[in-house]
Length: 291
Length: 320
Image 1 (spheres, each protein chain N blue to C red):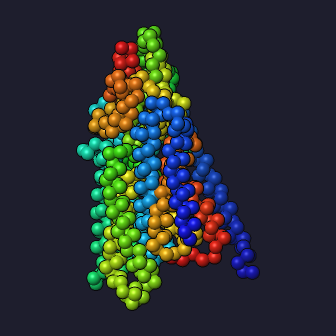
Image 2: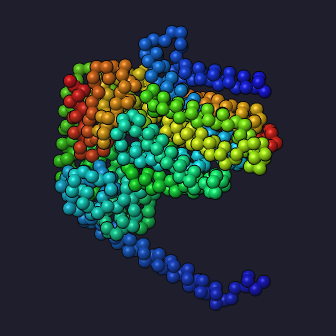
């Protein structure tokens, strides 16, 4: 019985606690709103990038002095490696981001966890998700990013350059439609499927990616299927020791047209990142496909 | 009994042949063109042979281990051997080592497995012999350590390296290649022959050390020989194609339900059953989402576990 009876004093104290709590909430949210309006009034000065592609865009537009934090995977250009690190793409450290006091955190839908954005918001941080999932979408994504960062002109220059180069590549397509396979890693056999910059590049160049039918963006592909689809050209994305690692696979698919006729090429990893260098990756493929 | 053995071996043989010609695109052996023959010889045949070898090694190892450790929960992975293999292979995959070409990852896995096996053996050795409980605990402890190190490695590696390592760890039979088969076959047959030759001793060990003594076997010596056999088979099968779960643990139990607990029959039948199950699992794994391939290790459990549970429900005893 004794436990259930509540004295008037206790009740009052509880009521006061609740009131205090709401007051505090109101105060905090006021402060946050203040922060927001201030940030949107002038362009954000302290930028944290959660993706290597975003870091590259920032360097390409020349506003890198405003970049205060990058991921451990941001390795291009070399100078980016000297920026403070906030962890990986899939596991960025909230503490590290907070300690850099960024005005804005730039994220991507391709590799950053969604919950991280929610966490940032709950702490009153401003974030922006760069929406470019395909190569043709990249220029528009760069323009939007420029607007958010208050650097419309610099970003417009970069976007227009990429657009112009895509158009030029489309216009200078080779005569024949080639069947292409782009291998990311030979063992286990992982290839570039649909919705990747590689797939876009092959489409822009007027050829066909034989793996675009497979499920997933980077599917684990079947060896038999390579035989059956018999690609005309095989690309290997460059990685450490790729030419040695690929020998085993090549010996097993020796009867495929691309291997028989020596149409196997080792290209750079520029297409693995949907950033400013991706267009150079397309031009590289064009050099082989338009022969 | 003989009928059951004939049926098991016969259906296993049928499964091997079926796995060779069925698939995402079936091949008619009587009207195969050049392309089909090429697919058959350089992709499907090595793959079926590797699944046969791996299943054989894992099934037999499981049956032997459950006997020498006198524990129905023992499987080839409980001794930490596979975790050692996985750690060393993942290290090679993530760092991108390639010094032995195609054989790099299998060789790394084999070395990792052997080193772990020797270490677990040393930990389980006391007063001139193996102690089942010590072996088990050493294996479990080491397994935890290696898994933690593997997780550490994967959490600091790039996403791409992590996915490659994960695919290998779940069992990737697509790596099957003629160049690796002779080595795998040599170690697995050696271990298998060793285990078969000690069939009577294994039967005695299951009864307990005192009874084994009175039956004329030296339990410590026999346990040591059988441990070597298991180590060879497990190390070779893990290095052939990663970690395939279920087979080593549950195939011997299924075998006991069907043909009884005599090790002289159970060990070879577990081997045949393991090989057949892995063949079917790989066939399913490469067919359902074709041209994307699913790891066979997932499919073995998905196919095998319900059947095991069904048997468990129907029979009353579960012992070794």
